[in-house]
Length: 235
Ligand SMILES: [Zn+2]
Image (cartoon, rainbow, N blue to C red; front, side, top):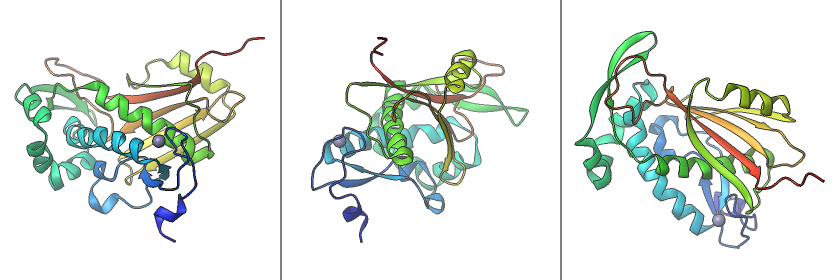
C-alpha cells in the first residue's frame, strides 16, 4: 500500500476536511534535515490546500533555520543545500545583507555566530501547523477549526510558572525526536478533551535567529505551541 492510499479517506490533520485525494505530509518537513537523517519522520494526512500552504512556510524555514544555529545537525543541512536554497529565495538573500555577528554560548564556549534578521511569523506560522500535526500523529485527533492554535519563540526556561501549572494538569505526555536529534519535542495534553495541549520544540539545539546586534550570552530559543478552546464554558 502506498503512502497515498494509507491516508485515503482520512481527514486533513490541519483543517479536518475529508476528501478522497488526500496527500501525505511530513509534520516536520524532510528539508529541515540532512538526507541521511530523514527516516521515521511522523506523517499525517493533509489536503492539498493545507499541504501547499505549509510547504511555502517550510521552504522559508529550511532556508533560514539552519543558519540560526551552530549545532552539527544544522550545519549538515546547510552544507548539503544551504547555498542553493538561499540563491532561490530572494527574501532570505535580502536579509543576509543585513546579517551581523552575535556572540553566543554554545557548549559553554563563547562563539561568534551570524545573527540574521528574519520573519518570525513565517516560522511561528509553520509551527502552528506542526502543533496540529503532532496532535494528529500522537493522539489521532483533528484539532477543531474553532480552537486557538498559537506558536511563539520562548527562551529555554521562560514561562516556567505558567507551564508548570499546565503540566500539573496534564493527562498525558509525549516526547519525540525528528531527524535523528535535530528536533526534540515534548507535548502535554491537559484538559478533558483530546486536543488541548502544550508543546515545546527545540530545533538544532536551540535557535539564535534574530538576535543580531546583541552581544554577550544570549540563551537560545525554543518554540512553544499552545492548542486551546477559544472559550471555556465554565458552567
Ligand atoms: Zn486541510
